[in-house]
Length: 73
Image (cartoon, rainbow, N blue to C red):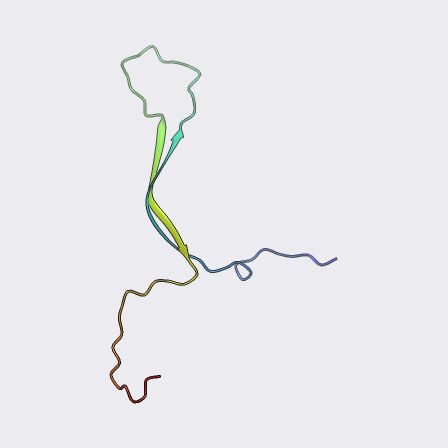
């Protein structure tokens, strides 16, 4: 039998562009409530990501002008 090892060589190359997406992750519940009820504890983690787009090659925003049209194909 032939074994298959997962390496970066067999994975596809992907370029990712992102913008606004929010992920709310609640924190662990504290079983021992403190007697200070006026003390506020932060118990939520918010991850914010805009949009997500994937492409097989990177977008190249630079335009190139042809200097010598006689050799350009």
